[in-house]
Length: 313
Image 1 (cartoon, one colour):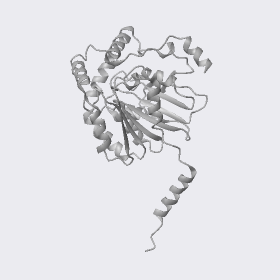
Image 2 (cartoon, helix red, strand yellow):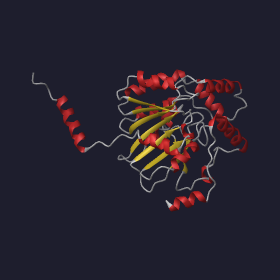
Image 3 (cartoon, one colour):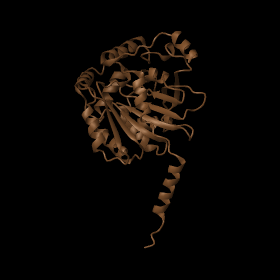
Image 4 (cartoon, one colour):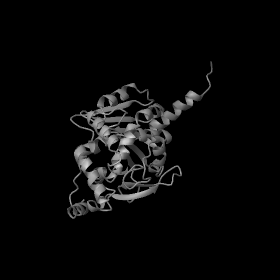
């Protein structure tokens, strides 16, 4: 810990743009400066704490995808994979990543069409995005994955989990955007639609994505119904971008094979990464499935064999 303390003292304090005004200004300012990152992580975090990497998109799409990772000497038991929202900026997760204990690792991605990720244009089909981001789920067989879909990324993460049965141990839908905007998001999308020719690329891509989301939600619901893993929905009580009522309704109405756990965060808005780092890490830790004992596994095998045995009647 002393070494890490030295690392952070030697670098400027990372100050996250907060709320819609902060995020909007960061987008405009970085576009004017010609930066793909709003807050270049290398200026704030040592390369051994948070590191930017690039990988090839899945599905032979040929895109170069950018992400932030927490380097570990050997793969951690748990990997938390974060599919970010719209706009999609991995660096907003950097303080959470830097505070993770060594037995966790995290990767947060700039989705296709954002930040340092290709292509330059919007990829509006969530199925294509899920295919492109599938390599994020790679890792040693013994490593377990907690897949987190943030806002618009919730639908994409759900499709990814459904396409990789047995690879994802649990799914978290964080501030999930479910096709209907709250008052602030509605105003922003309406204004952005009229100004698409002049606003920065990331904001333009976000407007296109959000506008086309309602027609794609049936795919998300169908994927949720097929999942056999624990599903958690975490949502701010005063979210004025993605109404909490829609998240609560999804938790109670979608006929999932595994029960959905719903948590409303008192006083929180859409930007749960703006809150205390320890609070969000604690909420994600609470979504990690408990390890299954050898006795429970053997009992499951025995019950499965009993169901397969022909009846004597």
